[in-house]
Length: 230
Length: 230
DNA sequence: GGAAACACGTGATCC
DNA sequence: TGGATCACGTGTTTC
Image (cartoon, rainbow over all chains, first blue to last red; front, side, top):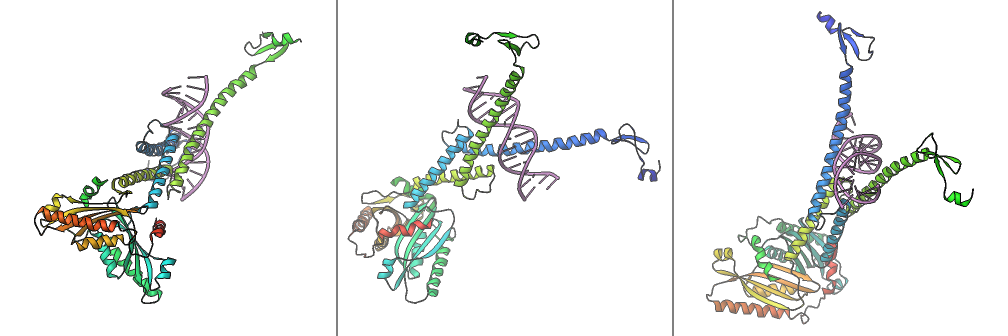
């Protein structure tokens, strides 16, 4: 067999099986079982990967359900629907509880935040023409003397603290100050400038948690102070 | 055909089909298709009730999942596993938050109280030989500028506020100050004198709630400041 | 036997 | 097109 006849093979189908039996340069070939097997493999592997993927999906869902079961008391013998119902109840209940608590106290969130807003209080503005109110809200990591720093910063901006509400919880702190500022210079630009100044200063304090010069690390020992008193 | 023969029918199986072909009071009956249909119906109805029951079960589970989806923010486009993962996170987070709250929150009581205690902190006393720690606890009616008054009083006694934890709840306030005092004069008598001084001063502030000269009664409006911020 | 609950594989649908 | 998700009907087990 020369190279040319190999490169230009003569395909001759036989009469036995027109589709898959033929001769290749005189050698008998039968593609039928191979193609059949290939087709079967393709279908089978597709089906297999499909069912395997579906099993993985089921396992993922069931793993989360198992985790939930550990978190919810008395849910060991519940079926899936009952378990999920119990989860719904728990989430609702905790949501309500948090709402209830949030009505009375501030719960620090996990995100650092400083906001400064004007406060319109009719009584205040009617009796204090030359001053206006601001509400400064700070949420950040708690640390010793954070409070003094905030206080000093507000004083340095000639702000009077009318009211303050501070809650520290789990190493986080949320503070809201009601501030009175002199309205000596008229115009919104000045008020906005002051507002921005407050924001900048408070943000700097709020975000300098670990870089403070305080060498007394009371933070890790805080529980000792507060826990025994209730 | 009389009533008796109808009530006590004579069943006679034929030779053609022993099982299902017979005569009923002379009338030829063939139960075969009926029984066959019944058998088919039984199987079919069993299968149907099975699949229907299974559908009800799926619907129950999916309904709870839909409820959970409404309760969990940002879960609209999640698949089931991700949704459940998010639920797990939320439950864990809320559990932790509740634990934290119950561990740390001070709930002001209805009785006015001022207590001053020494704090023994090994680390503090080892690194601050010339100072000692006090814990001052104040529980009284809340009012504007109570805080400033307390702060001023503590400062006037040359006390440094290392840490402060204040919670106001329902018009009452509970404040705990961790104070650092100079140990310049040796001896426990002086320390006790200071302790008594602090107590007297703080008690005076705590019990002068309604007699304060502050003419701005912000108290009834406090919630306006705090509620919208969450 | 039968209802309930679960896992499984499959068809359909959507990027 | 393949990969991922879902609903569905079925086989199986348990009480």
